[in-house]
Image (cartoon, rainbow over all chains, first blue to last red; front, side, top):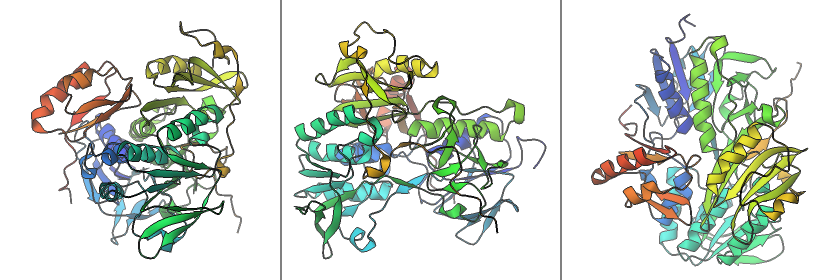
Amino acid sequence: MPDDLTDGRIVIVGASLAGLRAAEELREQGFTGSLTVVGDEPHPPYDRPPLSKQVLLGVAPADSTGLPMRRDPKAEWLLGVRATGLDTLGRRVLLDNGESLPYDRVLIATGTRARPWPNPAEAALDGVFTVRTREDAAGLAAALDAGPRRVLVIGGGFTGSEIASACRERGLEVTVTERGPAPLVGALGGTLSKLAAVMQRNNGVDLRTGVTVTRLLGDKAFTGVELSDGSQVDADVCVVALGAVRNVDWLADSGLAAGPRGLACDAGCRAFTMYGIVTDDVFVAGDVSRFPHPLFGYQLLSLEHWGNAVIQAEVAAHNMVSPGPLRRPHLALPTFWSTQFGLNIKSVGVPTYSDHVVIAQGSLEARRLAMVYGYRGRVTAAVTVDMAKSLDYYQHLIETGAPFPPPPGAADRAIAAEIPIPSDVPDPSVLSHGPTVALTGYLPDRRLTVV
Amino acid sequence: MQTVVDLTRCQGYAQCVFLAPDVFRLHGEEGLLYAPAVPDDQVERVRQAAAACPVQAILLGEEVSGGAR
């Protein structure tokens, strides 16, 4: 590696939000060397959140969500090229076209993909979709345009709920199946999941909880499903919304601490090897990363959040061109949003890292509230429903380790703010969908094998 | 030109909805829906919306050109 960190060769693997923002930030931080971005999709970086919202509502075509650049990173873009391996000793990224790219430092930002329906033959039926890519969303939007008699959504997480909401807004009949007791329960806990269930049913969703889909029916085209309670639902379109899978397969032989929860790294975005030793030339950012956070017991967090991809990419880029003492830790709080059934849901902190909650402002009946989550007497998260302007205040409480229940802070403090109730966060393994925030413990996934 | 709104930052002040109603609209009380591809005749309005946003959540810019190999 050249002594001058602002020169040399940097390769970014992953050409989505994190990859783009990292490339821009490298130049912003004064990197003048060669910069190559590798992406397996044939498109320049595009935004994914609109794919389950604007695109399905017909507000924007699927191919119109290209991400604007903050500045031109003057990178070479290798699009439609998949990275197949990382030679950490020879410092090369191996590509599926047989070539390899030498690097001095590499950033891994390969993100996630949609978890497919486990039976490949059933998943291949016409009318069965997942939603992760531009092509996925275009296909589903076209299927909805065709006016199906019923859409069946498997999984009541955020993506599944947003898709169900879009279907209802378009006047389409929709059934949602969820293995857990209610939609969004894995992310928000028991109380808000009950509100989510009420919103779905009030908006005409046929919500089936506590059931699993045992079979997708159809010869060539999808015609319906069989459920674990013995019933059958006829539908023309099936959306598989079972959460995400980390794109770490290509790192299997790299010796890095990559596993189902992502690639583990330190607070400075430097990847760990499978022995728990930190590297100094392999960095990681975005959904594929798994990083420690001091506010949550230094457990490794796995996030699937837009905002984290941006902020972590900026920190990683800064650290890739900065000497040790000038490096920054990635300490930003997890934040996310979801719009569904006319409600704007926003979250800060880690709601699943909780034992109790209080409704600090508003009420469930009003469909407008701020819920504060606490763990062992400390505020750890807050979720607002149509009360986004309050969220900054609760973020400050989380960052300062404020006591739970939180002290009076708002003029419209709810009476319920005095009454902590159990947060009722289920074991994620009982849910259909994966959590978008997961506490994944302290250790790299892969155990050391002594040969 | 393309636009993207940092909805983590957005608090639903809706200044953009008044300044560029063809691009931004509210969905419910405070959820924001927008068209990411900005037509030429809307660029100036989106620029104003970006400047007026109280939480500076709107980014307007060119996308990476597809021609790069």
